Length: 195
Image 1 (cartoon, helix red, strand yellow):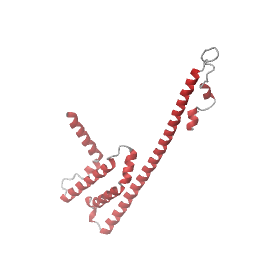
Image 2 (cartoon, rainbow, N blue to C red):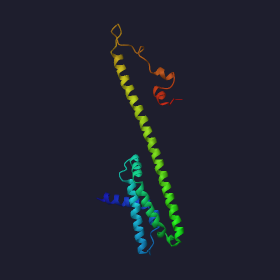
Image 3 (spheres, rainbow, N blue to C red):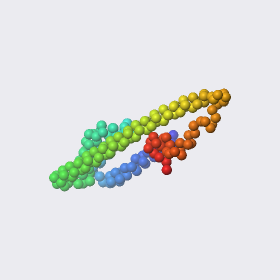
Image 4 (tube, rainbow, N blue to C red):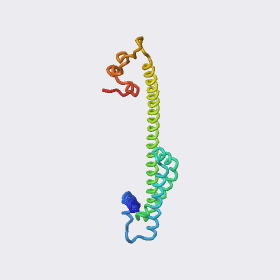
């Protein structure tokens, strides 16, 4: 029972450490109720955004696909955060034109960063898929060659010469000779050669 409470304390410490910049900026003794409500809303939206990214994503590909599907909601949440953030830091008192320009600039920048992130993740997924296909193809060839080798060995073992003796080792093909002639079969197959 003690380990459960220790795990909970550790989890809370980890969460606090990951958001230390966030919590430290909001630990002020004389905050207004409006500011506390705004910060509470910000915290909820931040947690919601983190949950959107983390839930149902047990693999990188699933997370990337989820991000593509949930991009509009993430944009909406980021816009909501951008509208609240200037007021939380006391910058909301400036002229309306300046705040609107900052909001628009921040909105464009966040949208640009999200799009860039999505493109990078799509590229990583494409590369991962291509590598997986290559690995599958090579694995299929290795299995085929292994089966072929097993069949050839069984045929070789069943042949006997005229004196009813099994074929001597001298007459069997020696695979070690192929190394001296160049790269191994697998090296030639994959394009990798030993030096």
